[in-house]
Length: 398
Image (cartoon, rainbow, N blue to C red; front, top):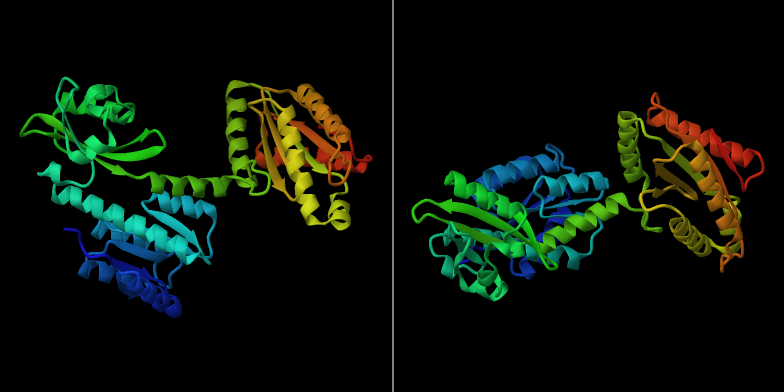
């Protein structure tokens, strides 16, 4: 029997708490509200919650700390973080610390209710695993047992339905490969109790495997949870955090991370690395003359054009506005300057359907062992400024 669907709403906004509580009640959930972190923690100590909706910014305790304390008291309780004042770095941190999902205010109520439904279902499935661990046949989620030979000795009905080829394939099945296979091999060697959690991808689905050695019968038992929805949410958050929404290339934050890593690699191994900064000449005229929709199309077309002319291991990013960066590993100043000149010609010769023709100015700088991030960025920025100052539609290097 599944536990009651009790949801904890933690937010210092009284109207929002009341609105969420009313909607949850209408959708068949029971709810308890808390105006701050202390009240939330006290509520978790009194009641068993399927889910907690926690605002990131609370008057007494940060939302992520409240989540950690909730999880410490009730590990099975799922958490959805809600906020209108956070970076995507915080979103990634929240999911990395155990949040089921993360929503930015103002959110669509349908999106929130969908995530609430998935979170409650996941919590109840995990609760069922614990409650029915001795009766795997009754579990709604797949349960699997393995013999020392690697053969699958038992599949409950849910496992048979979801993985019809598992018994025939045994340990060669994708579900039991990679990280899961390593854990299984270790458990056969150690034969020690304790649960190990691993993830496995089968087709388009992602599963969380709870793997343990059952000493009483000398076999390995695996309980399987479908976490595809959660992984998709995590991937969406990561994509938003690292990608420019207009052009689909790396954003400034992600590019800076990649650049720092390549600088460390170039310094460690003594290999060349160059940086190219470029922007569209007189881009304001494009927006003023044709409108911002045309300006956006130009930025997208330029991005596609550049990607067609660079190497696979080069990294292009939108630095801001009409400014872009191009990281060129294994390229010295001469090679990067030549590559930038080819890009300049390709852009100048390209017919942009919405505004005929544009030109681009380029600055090029190569990494020196004494460089830090600021010094390298300053040199490439100075080179671009010089290209602009000397007439635009040209390449300057430093």
